Amino acid sequence: MGLKNNGMPVLELRVALTRDYERAVEFYCVGLGIEPAQNGQMTAGMG
Image (cartoon, rainbow, N blue to C red; front, side):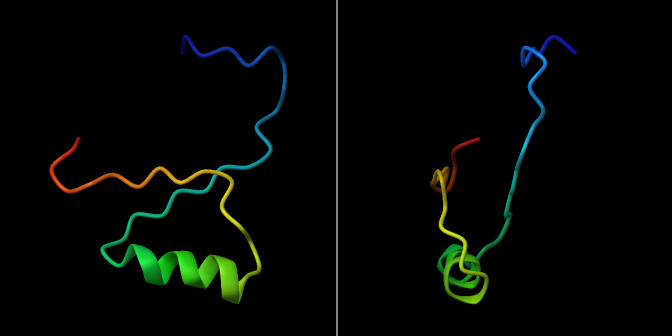
């Protein structure tokens, strides 16, 4: 497919598509105890 990862496996990928971003972040952080490694939140109208 054109993407190379030098033989390294993908260890983790999470994508959350939601209209209530803050609630989704709270669920992951408070409910599951998982802190975000990166925040890729986009503003409305981009993409």
